[in-house]
Length: 418
Image (cartoon, rainbow, N blue to C red; front, top):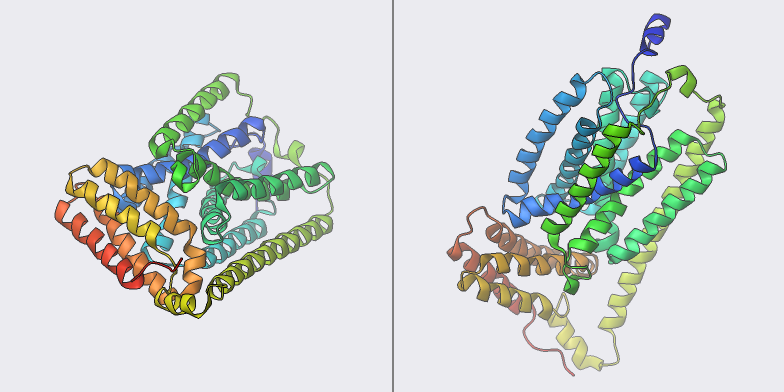
């Protein structure tokens, strides 16, 4: 905590983050979308892989952080470049846990929630504020960027959990997040603490941007628009650059006030009560919705297993622990034909459909038989790894696709009875 002399000197310093305006939220959503699509572009389209992409983006993030820490005031280009890189890196951290380490999205969501809560707690205890209007010391800036990183990682895990594991899809997830943001905006207008409102909305805009990015980049067969990660990333990066140039010229997002003028006279007990109430409400709604949706998935599986097709259907179903896998087999066969023809770009695009379809059904399929789901998931990961290598090897790609098809055939021996 700063003493009176430090406090007096700090009032002369400028905050190193922007004012929260409409422009702030526009760029924030654009950054989160780029974080989702750029990670896919580097990982999939360029074939760098998750680990390679993470190393490169981590290095760029460190370089950007050096410039951000050395700056004596808020510089739009430096600040927003850092946010974009944090967004990409935060997305990659969650993807690494999910795809490479097979950590369930539920576990990632809980872990990053706790990490964010601990960061906020230590920040508040040491600085007595979580306001972004007072980011003018190294320690506060460090807390700020740690919180930003964890919000991106948490938002990625939450968004993927809702859209894919729970099968809600990109649009539905986006609508749910927009509803939460709207409610928080109304609550802020009615007297909810501005700092509390800011951080909740900041967290929620991550799955909003990710859902938007996935919806625009995914193929039409996977429920998206079909722009692809390259085009989506390019469009949103251009929008970010133009907006940042505009703000650099107009300086409309500069924080001009000192720490004294920024303070609001509000009882600490009132703010504490608001924090407890909002957290309980969010936890109750989110976990209630999670268990309700899981119950729906379980019920749909039960209904499918005991349909009116009778005992014959049940017998075949017992031979199909994950149900009908014909869609994944078809995509795998298509990809194999493209690989054998040397059309690796088209093969990469086709296996993206495989990945999207598999991820959307992950919650339902994993609930049917986790052990067998993991076996198929590993086979799909092997296909994705080989096809997205910087220099794909035809033999390895062929072998991994053939292995996946063989694995699916072993679980799906005969067509379902009509």
